[in-house]
Length: 257
Ligand code: SAH
Image (cartoon, rainbow, N blue to C red; front, side):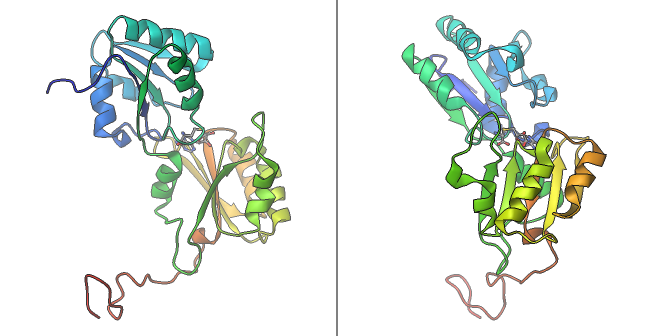
């Protein structure tokens, strides 16, 4: 198939949560045609680089600063090479494509983004759960605890916890004790279910399940300090109601009761 990809652009590709088969077909095609690949080595499964063609130049961005990353992109694009920037999960969450896009724009270079499977979706699949459970929770809060990147005050964990809806907390497992304290302060009861999923969809994935009363100790004992999501809420519990959608007694547009 001839390449529909335009080498005057940089392609940002969501790499998925870890399992190399959770890359999109478009992402795969881009990787297999790329001349230059810049990947976030701290989180990307290196097995994804097996999709690259022989001779592709792959750079781990873990040790590079923004200027160096942009230099690699500009050098590639100027030479007519296909440049792919591979980032973990999906690009739209804690992804930093905006600043890279801004710097490229200053140099007259555009970009395209290709969606990926975010780790919060990989984690739910790992557990076989739904964040939205009829009559229990119909919303999901995706957030993080403030760290070196500050979080706006109105988005504090306490404020979100007050809703007692499903939560997926990124980038915070290293401070699990503090996360628990804030969720409790916000109003989640101590027996609220919690799952910490380390390296969802990787072969060495680890799942720790408990409650707000127990999870901090369990996570510390398990030695989990990074690459994990903290999932919180009654969606992890036993209470459940069948949905109306497939209820034989419920009529809708496509089916009569
Ligand atoms: N854009 C990414 C998130 C990048 S921020 C996405 O959509 O998933 C990095 C954080 O994502 C990590 O600190 C961790 O909280 C989470 N993360 C990334 N990959 C993960 C995985 N395979 N399992 C669990 N958490 C993961």
